[in-house]
Image (cartoon, rainbow, N blue to C red; front, side, top):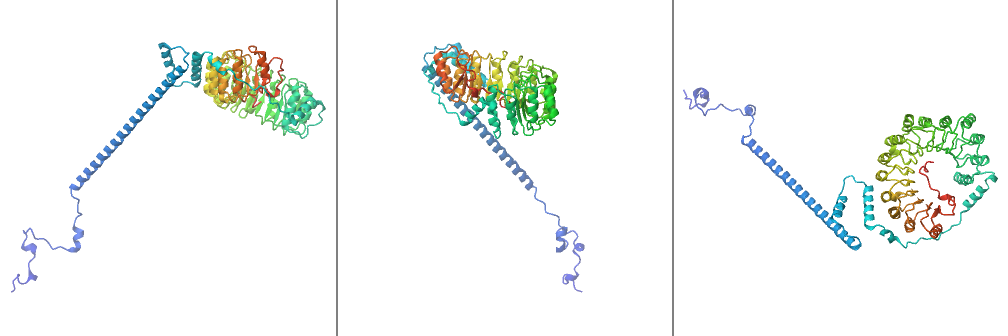
Length: 567
């Protein structure tokens, strides 16, 4: 029998013969290795290293942020230091210039310590300080230091006293001849509307408008009929003229001073003959129609759905119901309303509510109405941003508070009339100056504003003004004259009537500096010599109000009213 050592095929099982051998292992099947062996895990020390790397990265980020912050703080400190140095340099330059100016004008007395302290207090920058206050304070300082000496610096100003006369055009000559012989005109056929308007204006100035001339104006289907003086028309004349004209093409109708003709009976009879009314009418002026009633206005409003501008100035029979009627028909469309001088309109809740319904009103005149302060304040608060033209002339009760509202809520105002308001002070000028920066037409007739106040207003707003009335503003003097000459370069119309504190040299200064001035009113100028006024009459500027000159000597240079753009 062969032993097991010699025959390896009959060797006993290793597990049975050597159960306790630690090195013995079962045979390995190469196909099942991947199925039985568990996944290999990362060593523990790899996670710890990753945490340390993250910590180091965060530390570097923190140091970078700290470095950026320190650099920003350093840059800010450098900027502030540079600004402080620049401010100190500016202050030094200012002091040097001031000292040099005082040396240059060595006639001034040395100032005391108290004066220096007051000056420093005045020069402190006050937050919210207005440009009007700055200008007024500067003017007061100039007056304190120079007195009347500055007026002598403009001595020797020479004006061009030679008027360059130009021959009238052929059109102007023809219109004058037609106006003088209007009763002989047989037809204005094919004459343009703008020439008809000029002829009508010339005939109205001569008070020669009658039924026959009105018939000439309405023939040939015009789009505009404008007559400034309809005093001679009767009720039947007006009814017939309106009935026979082509109302479909009529867009503008101005029948001023038609008091006797514009009655309720005439309007009623007209609508019986022409029930369609005025389908295209956009502008209507009935100034001085003292017989016009609320019912007649209701008939007109009902027949003119496209009406946008209406002038009812001096229509004394109208009441607050007239405003309510207009608000009912044109509350959201009316752009211009003139009810100045309508003494029948009294302040009441109906009037206040009706006026506040005009959402798009841009031109408003309530001149001559009493007790409407609250009404104006309420309207300006609601719709003041739409206003471009406002007339408050002779409105008893209007005060500085009213003008505060106007200045605050009417920033787009271009024309303002606050004539004959005794309660206004320089505080009103301040509000207008700071709030209304687009003014080009201003009337300050018979106000109590100071010379410094008017001068400060012109210094801030004078660059845009072309029509200015200072009639009977008694305190107007040297400072106003200086501001007019320096800042009002666009001035076309100027009224200095009864400003008796102005001198001959100051008037020369104004006329020499305001090169665009076309017309100047000088009523009541008794403080200057007759020879000087005679010289002025020969200048290129049309002077109205001189002694022995006609009030109508320059009809083409008539002053545009505040509501001229609409009416």
